[in-house]
View 1 (cartoon, rainbow, N blue to C red):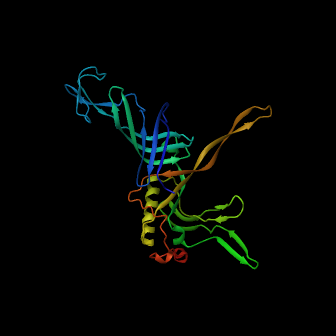
View 2: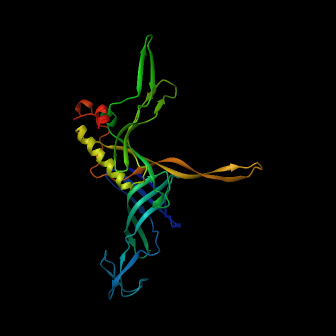
View 3: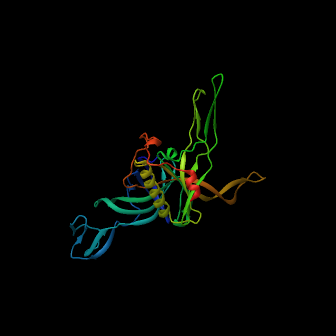
Length: 315
């Protein structure tokens, strides 16, 4: 589920991987993710903005005349960099891609020339590295909303009671429900294949079905278009349920090039042929007016209206 997240890691730019800077990635569902670096990717923290008699820093409004490593007569301001992609590796070795990053100097110690550079992030992709923007091609995005399964009202779980206190449990995922096509994006309701757990001593068993809105993006439409669509669908659900719905999780599927290791007859190892493999990535981004109500109990009887498969089939 979407929840507060924070982790230390090391970070670098794809075009300059030699410069690695420590920092902390933080995320709260109600605001944009942030990256706070202890240091900087850049050789200088300033940019020239004009000529003056004394050197001034606009954020501090003071002049430096003696013992300065700055050129006299040049007005400087702190840089405000924009990076399409920043790559990272968390302390647990999880790969991270930060997409659409807007930075600023948060703190600067003049004597030590040590900045604290902070970035606001639009999107975080967990468990993958995208080295350039062209690689971000999400085939589909699956979103789990609070109470969506109750609004849809379809379950593949069967419980059979027999004589002699026998209980049989079975699960067959319901068929995918096609909702509509908006532009080049297709909207479906899909169901988890299985989520079965049992106790260590076989005294407890649980089968849980999860229901998702799936957005198929086979024509590689912009990510922002997909995000706007899933946010709009959440607003529609809030209207239908009479209470704000929460986004519990967002995951995307992407094809990545993989080259395995092949052992030769002489015992040596070589790289195998390149092949595409589908992998799942976790997506995080800030949501304005985020409603965290997935723990609130909501009965279908309290909803304004429910999903109707037969009416959808006629449209």
